[in-house]
Amino acid sequence: MYTPGTRASARGLGPLRLAVLLVCCGGLLLAHAEATRVALYMSASNGVLDLSWDNGPQNLERQLQQLGFDVRSSDGQPTLSGPDAPAAYIIPAQNGPSFYSSVEDMNAISSYLSSGGLVVVLDANHGQGEALRSFVEESLGYQGSWSTCKQLSANAEKQLALTEFASSFVSVKEWPESLENAQTTSLLSWCRHEDSSASIVPLYTSIGDESQVAVQAFGKVSVPGAVVWMGYSWKDGEQEQWGLLLKKLVEEFAQGGYEAPKQGNADLHPFNVDSVLAAAADVGATYPPPPPKSESTKISVVNMTAYGAAGKTRDLVWYDDADFREQLKPLSALQLVDQTKTPCPAKCGACELAWKATRSNLQVAVFFRDPVQIARIYLKQIKNSGIITIQFIKWVYPPTGAIAGNVGRTVWNVTDDTSMCQSVLVVRVPPKKSGVNKPVPTGFNRRSLPPSLASTAVGGVLITMERPDNAGQNFGPFLEWVRFSGRVLYPENAAIYANAVRKK
Image (cartoon, rainbow, N blue to C red; front, side):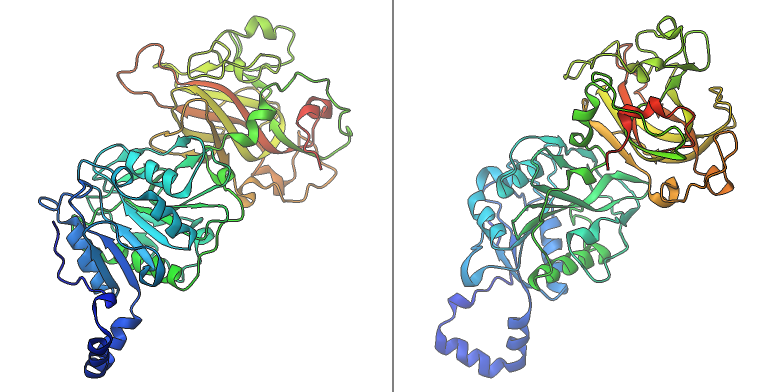
């Protein structure tokens, strides 16, 4: 049993004694009363914490006190409602055999969040993220399954930086720009849940790989409270920037700085699935609408396929070439531009209608008939995952399928693809980099682009996969399709884009 030295409760002081303390201790007690109250779980009785070998919880308690909080440490789940409700409830790293959600009252946690509370939960030393997943699902009432939310690494010395999404969670003034890369820090994948009301925001990620998350916030539409997961265990002691982050979050919540999400944010996730699955299931199944005007200088498109790839005997085969079917083979690059193929089964497994990566062939390229400015790329992997790099291929006229010397901007670069099979990886290219908002002047064509557009005109995309050294012959990964959103510049034949025209 843990016996903290600073546990206190105003309810335990009689009115006369409290008045005497107010008179005698004057300013000191007033200062203490004005301090923001936080509750800290410090119970070893239910198996959530093991305080005999890991001093992380005590280190966390000490830093909270140093930050000036009124810390109420409890041997068991504290009171989270009424006048004793804390501004934040903090649960240290779960280093015991039991998960918090399996032994404590999660209904009380849900009620606390519904009243606007903040729960900060640290990682667990087992379960590969299950402690967090179960805690969030039960406390926020998520319905459905996790698309992705797993532990990627522990004791990982990574450079951790504030994300561009942090301000969408809560408007903290002067967020810490980075966090210490302490050895006892775990990283999770950027979590995504299929509940449409879920709002999940990565606050700090590994520099250069936004899929590796060190601090992550979980909310729900119309729920005024939130759960924040932190990957640092405090086993290595107090850390200045991690402590500052805690202080900023708790104080901002205490001052009412958090607003309940108005809608879910699944589309923010780089592995978003729902936004394109329906449209991509059968691209060529319906009779095409009337084509755009042929004299158009640009066509805005969504869910567009590429139109060419390497074939059996040629570096570049177009989807409408007379010998396309002869060039098309199972598991080949041309599967990614076949507009009449049927969808692969909706289960994790190999499919002949997908491109397959092999030990000797880890790259695949697809090409466009006309120059394209790309705003988003959607890629569906159906067995295993392994997309680590996506690069633009510069527009060259006439297109020949040549890659050497034409590789341009890298728009996706990670060390480990954490997406699930049957999920869709969404890669977003900011407007300044894609060029989609630039004017498209008349008097030019695909043979001769204006200088203002030439640098952002793309002729294709090169995708690089990874696979484990010990992967078997049938590992893959398997890529079923690639789709694009953006705009086509100076199309020679606008009719081929009829199925992809963005509806206004």
